[in-house]
Image (cartoon, rainbow, N blue to C red; front, side, top):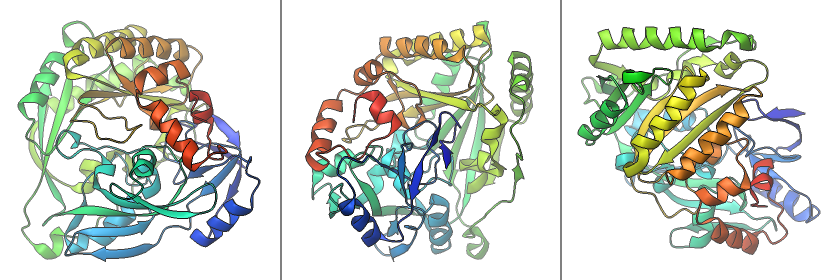
Length: 440
C-alpha cells in the first residue's frame, strides 16, 4: 500500500506487518532473511521519510497498558499507544506526562525514537529524559531490556535512534503530579526578533514557553512574535479539574489547491493573527488540550498544503549565534515569500547523552513549506546558514537533508553507527532516511 509521513512527501509503496504481540514480532524477525530491510512505524507522525521503507513493522497492536504505579509516578505501556491515550488514563489519577510534543497523536515508540521535545525543554529536557527503561526486539529476534544502567549503549542509541537499533515493544516512563488540567497562560508581544529573544530570556523561569513567529515580516519587524508562557493551574474543584478532555474539532476533508498558499494569503493571515492576538494579549486560563495541542483540533490539517504535501524544517542554533543565524534565515524566507502560517520559536536547555538527539542548548525555529521545486534550493541555502552557525537539523522533520550536512550536524554519528552494527550486524533496520544519511 502507499504510505507517507505526516508531510505527505515522499510517498512509497510498502508491505506492512502488524504483529499482535512481542512474540509474533520475535518470530517474524528470527524467521526472515537476514538481508531483508525493514523499519518500525508507529502513528506515522514523523514528517519526512524516517518511518518509510519497503517493509514496515507496525506497532498498531502493541498498544496495551502494562503497569501504572501511582506512588512511584511511573507507567509502563506498549510502544503503539498514543500519548493521548496515556493522558486519558493518567489525568484522572492526577498524573501527567513530563514532556509533550505538539500533538498527542504520536505513538510512545515514535516519541522515544525521535526523542521528542516540548515547550519546557529549557527546564525539563526532552521526552527520553523521562524514560526509565525500554524493551526492544533486536534484528535477531531477541527481546532485551535497556536503560541507563543496563545495556546503556543500546539505550543511548535507541533514544533518538529513529528505529534503527530495533523495535521498541514497551517502555516505562516517569510522570509528574498535577492537581488540575488547566494551564495559566500569559501572552506577551515582541515587535522584532531581538525582543522575542529578550522576552524568552526574561521569562526563563516559566515552566512552558513557546512563541508564534511571523516569518514573513521584514525590516524593523523582522521576527516579530507572540510569546505564550504557561504554568499548571492549581485545582479549584478536583472532580472537574482532573477530567480528561477530548475535542471534536474540524476536519479537512480533501487536499486544498496549493496555489491558495502564496505570499499574499500568508502575509494577510500573519498580519491579521498578530494584530488580533496583540490586542487581546495578557493572562488567560486554558485547558491543557488547547495549550499543548492546538492543531489537533483540525484533523488532517496536513491536507491544507495541497496534494504534493509539505516539508517542515526545524533547526537549533546555540545561544551565542542564534539571533544572527535566525535573522539570516528569516530574511531569506521573507524575501522569497515562501514562509508559513505556523512558525515556532522555542528555547532549549542542555542536550542529553543520547547520540542522535536533536535538542542542544540554544534556540530552535520551525517552519512549514509547501512542496514545490523552488523549495529545495532554498532549503540547501538554509542548511548552510545552520551549519555556519553551529546548528543542527531535526531528523523527525527531515525529508531531504544530505549525508554531508547530517554528519556535520551530529558529531556522534560514528559512535551511533558502531553501536547499531553491534546489535544489528546485517543492517536489517533501515529507512529511506537512514539510507540517504549514511546510517544504514
